[in-house]
Length: 346
Ligand code: NAD
Figure 1 (cartoon, rainbow, N blue to C red):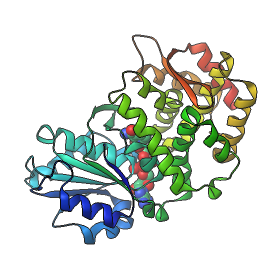
Figure 2 (tube, rainbow, N blue to C red; figure 1 turned 60 degrees about the vertical axis):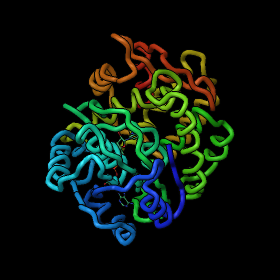
Figure 3 (spheres, rainbow, N blue to C red; figure 1 turned 120 degrees about the vertical axis):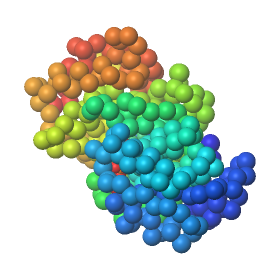
Figure 4 (cartoon, helix red, strand yellow; figure 1 turned 30 degrees about the vertical axis):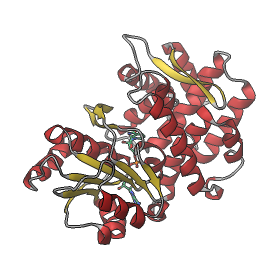
């Protein structure tokens, strides 16, 4: 998996000149953007792109669905893309996941590259080949594992990103430290978000994720540790996706999940109290508290039944057993989940 962190003008021009490895001359190029990345990111790369077709879709998680895929596949068909075409996904995790999914399934698959433009997609979503969309309200319910030809990361795109979106992406950085690097965790937990060296943390996160994914590309074992915080996190995110509720960003939900799941680890004697308190203090200082109450718990817990790590009726979690180390396939009961949610709301 080729991941390049450098100036996009250089990395994109190099990729297009060489066509990646093995060398390839693309018949057509299609660029996928959303309303925001069309405005903020497309102007940065436009001048380096040869003739191409631009597809723009509405931004936001609520559009990561089959209806939008149909719009994308229709545009690809209208542009008469053959199997030698290249798709460039220019955007955050939604564009990368959904554009990659459309590319991987169009005519049984065409090449695509990811140019992630949010912190979350630079440190996580663009690396590892998980592609997909939400379905009937379930997160990433339909999808495939297919690697992009390249991931081209440039922190320059983050200049136009809102502070809330940066905070969301930072949750996956936190996760990478908590599951793999205790030293880095101790470094970042002492600083506010504005004082963090994001360029350094992007490289750090990409290295960790890439190393894990290369050992287990289709998540049969060790890759599951990347789901720390995601079982309850996805459930909370899905719960708040419902119309009428205040939407949570992915990282905000995952931060909630990481704290709840750290509590489960603590209750099981895997994590000591001091570490739990450090995690709690840091997460609350950055993300505040998601407004949940006891009456929400049943519905939230019901979403964990659709978690992709489950086996049969068992709800399987990835739980840290110290900072920098994580277990996976840990069967967790409904009672434990409820206690963790109760602990979170305080
Ligand atoms: P996103 O793609 O919705 O982007 C967030 C917002 O920022 C959008 O409104 C977008 O238009 C805007 N935006 C993007 N780049 C911008 C820029 N440079 N300047 C200004 N605005 C910009 O969401 P996200 O947080 O990037 O990603 C979340 C998605 O990623 C979720 O769907 C999640 O499931 C997925 N994800 C996937 C993986 C994976 O391994 N495939 C891992 C983690 C998350």
